[in-house]
Length: 257
Image 1 (cartoon, helix red, strand yellow):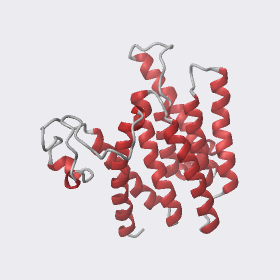
Image 2: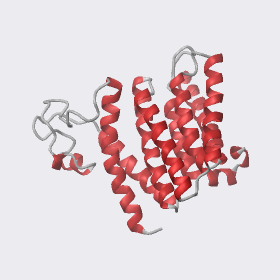
Image 3: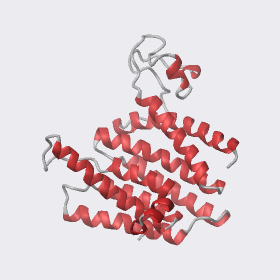
Image 4: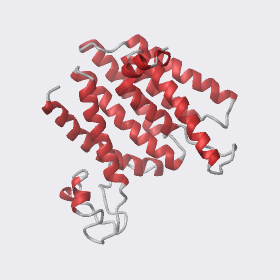
């Protein structure tokens, strides 16, 4: 794998991660992700371009605003760094450039969904619906122009993953939300385009992680009636499946169905 390609993806991921920090902050508040530009949450002074370089600016400013000195949340560089790493991972794992270019932003989007759902207990339609349209179009484009993706399993993956969660949401309204169903549709679409085993691994890991999270919450004094966001577990499982599904299936064949 050419080092230049990995570096290119990583740098692109850092920039995309910077955009995702805006999405994570503004979308749950129903604010525009375009205007106004980024500003200090303390004093409101617009952030200048040289103070908005992903990760680097945060380190140089020691996590504080240049103007008022208010501390800036470490969530910003964390999201940027994590997204950059996931973009690099996509470049390493997927040798076909178009496929890697499709998977990379999907992985970054999973980071945003996980942070939003963990904090606000919601998976916004403003993220999921446009993403479904854009990734559906991208899957079709890449499959027809470059190959390496399956349109059939993309559609079936969407229906299978979202369909199962939809039934669960109907049977147990308090345990599964429609936001989770819509997220499952997106995950099933993208991972299904890669192959059935990716969807199988994502679904299995999501269930296992969600179950473990529920056990931990109960052990820490939580109630069975408390709502627990399932989106972060689904998103994390989708990331692991995208990057490691073939290896996990070889280790435990039952994951791939």
